[in-house]
Structure formats: structure tokens, C-alpha cells
Image 1 (cartoon, rainbow, N blue to C red):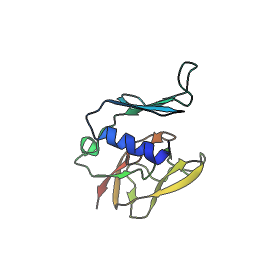
Image 2 (image 1 turned 30 degrees about the vertical axis):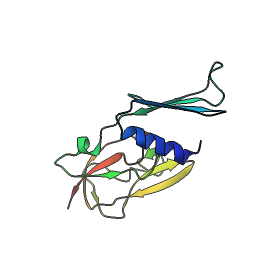
Image 3 (image 1 turned 135 degrees about the horizontal axis):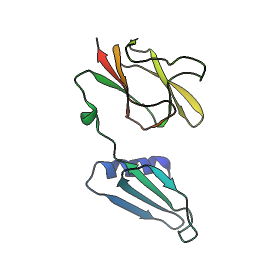
Image 4 (image 1 turned 120 degrees about the horizontal axis):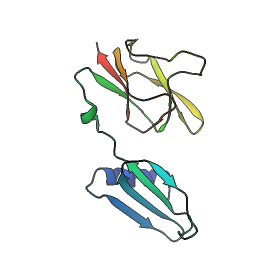
Length: 148
């Protein structure tokens, strides 16, 4: 099953009241379930070849994270969040720093490629919502900004 197709299935599951979905094919099977953690479990001797279990973490929606202080800068991709370009350098931004549209705020590593993420809003960083080296998902809020 292609990644794009799997992402479509996960999106449908997230937007519906369905709690669990299993799709079986000739050589592999995929089971997607809404639970409290994210993990991929490798196949076991008893399971069909290629079977994986993917459990989706139900994260707070943007409406839940919406605060009076501002708007969020969101992850444009899935990957690993880094607050600086290397362990020896200071973070791109910290609480209280001013940002402008286009200013680099962090790096997200995806498939061994370092992607510099730029702010899409001008203002002051109110809160950093993720920790350094933490896995992030598409659309996940990374920073809370008080707009100018």
C-alpha cells in the first residue's frame, strides 16, 4: 500500500466516528485504530506477511489549542523537530523573540533531509509547543505567536 493511500485512509478515519479500520490484502494487512499513543508494531510469526499495526494518537485540534495570546505556526510536514541548526548553536527562536514572515524558526528533518521552517506570521513568540528532537505531525502547532 502506498504512503499516500495510507495517509488518505488515516484522514478518513480521523474525520469519522469509526474507531478502528482493518484492510486485508493478498500479501499484507493494515490496521488503523484511534488510541492514545502512536506506534508501529512489527509483524509476528502468527500474523500475515507484511502486517503492521498503526495506532493514531488523537491530538488536540487547533480549536483546543487556540488561546487568546495568538496564532500558531504549524508543521508543514511530518518529521523530527529541531530548534537549532546544530547542538552547538542557539535555538532559532525562544519565548519573547520577535519573528517576521519568512524568518526561520526551526528545522524539521524528514527522510534525512533538513527542512528549514519559516514563520508565516509576524509577532512575538509566546510559547514553544514542542520539545527539541520530538516527532511532529503535519499541521501540528509548533509555536504560539502573538501577532503584531
